[in-house]
Image (cartoon, rainbow, N blue to C red):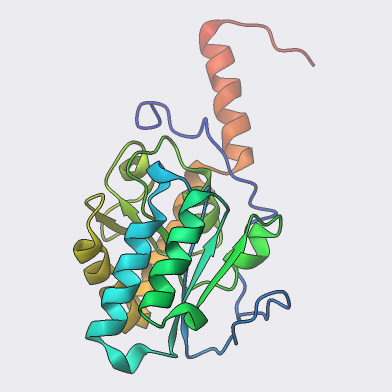
Length: 221
């Protein structure tokens, strides 16, 4: 487990890193404006990943805070059976135009740099590369309190943890971060620092070297 030996999992911090200002994403039809808030998730759109809970939370958010319509957008990156369900739900509530569902993409690092908040709504999860990539991009993370997520996301330090399959809990967490830009900034800065201290490739190499040394194994030069 990471908690007993941190740094044996890594993210490429040369590829995933923050930008000081948001950059346009030419392939995305959404209009990127600095004052707006962009929420995103990345992953296969299959049952256990549960993007539907995030979509339900987005619908609730817009129903309860109509002033956010046109100011808060959602990016659901990935392909699978839940994509069609998500589109159907968004169309039912007339919110399709505020959500981008591009399917599977290769430009994940660039997409991450357009976001303000990263969400991982999974029902179960190991050690999530997507969370590490978001943290390396300097994003605050909202994640379900399952599997390895609590080992990466520290409650109120690098993000917010919520129960799985709970749109109500997720909408509350989203609302906190949407309305508090300073909190987003603080959590994002701590996310980045946590990755640099514990999950960079340099740290992983050092820790693997230490493991080899502790086992008395000879390393190839």
